[in-house]
Image (cartoon, rainbow over all chains, first blue to last red; front, side):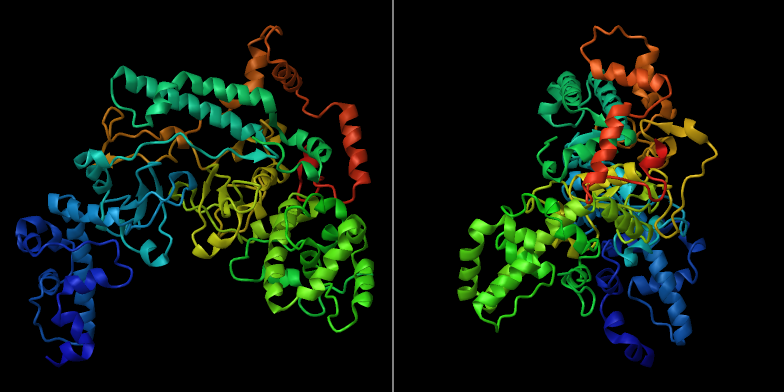
Length: 273
Length: 348
């Protein structure tokens, strides 16, 4: 019993899971219900995945009472974290798990999208693999539908399998009201107000892809998810784009030197895009 | 009178070494002393003259009598004094009555603003963009947070050229998108201090950089084996958004099955990260020329451009080029002229 006191008593006298989710670096995890953990069906197959499975499970469920040396304790502790992570991946796709993660999502516990045009939309944690120790956790933004690396190295070291490849998609199937409206707003590189040709050509092509998709969706009578106004003026979008191009033109590398010299420093900022 | 730079730490280098100012280049005093480069800034910055003095470390000696100091100032920043002569003297006198400690903080913030606005212009000049390219090579501007860009280097940009509108952002040349810097200390840095032009101009100035290189590795230039055919739309085809396109788009899946586009929660934003598998699709001018359009099209300039490219020549007309060169010689601090690191010049 001495071990309990010497190691760090609060960890073991209070609930292990409480301690785990409140410790630094584990902000992405939610607390798994006792009921879920004690139902063996939910843990199917994990005994082959986790070392000292039974001890680890005891530790997680606060019934651990083995007298052992520090090294052993350390190993079991590590196994317990691994086990918790793997159960976590299963738990968060259950009804209760989804609700818990939803709360965290609403509080932006997983961070905000770094993309400027997403205006700090909250992120969701996700894995690129369901098999442990393959890829670290990534963050999914539902607004731009892309994935990002966590800012902090503490989080970047978490195994992606603790969240799985499906959770962040399932949550939007279960709560369709949460799907953010999509926006066509984007960054266009410019030189003194002029679009850069290489990037602008790509943007035009991408916009065509988007409009094709919208047409497809309209045919299938599926909501496109874009803002209402934008949906209506689908055709106008292109016209606007073209007009703009005609007015100000675009730059290629070869033209830059000559043009900008002519404009001079005083012209900076006066040419609006 | 030349200012003694470097003996103690200059205002500029101490400003650039402040926490959160890691993205700034050190503007050369030469550039600041050229009045042409400061055109129009007087109206944008309060206490312009004092701020400029502070930046250049031309500290007027407080203990001396007013007259002496006034004269000294005129010597030091002669160009500026000439410019602001009508308003200069009363302005200066007012300062002497009120220049107490509290004023210093006002001047300090004015100086920061002025430095930022000069910086916006400086990093688009030859010397400035060169300095920024060194910082880029050293990875001072951080890396793209997008997973599929695999940590490529970013560039600091502003979304507006007008100060006070938005903070500095990071432009990723690999996915052509802008991101919020990861560290909150950059959220106090004005985006206008970098400006809207720098990011795009950098790519046009240094087309040779291999943009797909991760920030942790030393940057390399694109290998030249593909020759001139590699160029498209004014850039190396391989450098057009290398982080986009097939295999670089995240595909949402549930238990291994792709989420259908027809689902309400299905993918809607793929276009943002898409790129044609065959990049030559984007060579609009060539396609336009190939289509053999009639010239009664109202888009005349496009047609000209198409013919130029169809003949394989991309240089501007001879006379325009000559004029450009003359101008370059006349204005010593002209914002654009490139040769280092295989810049646009060598591409012509």
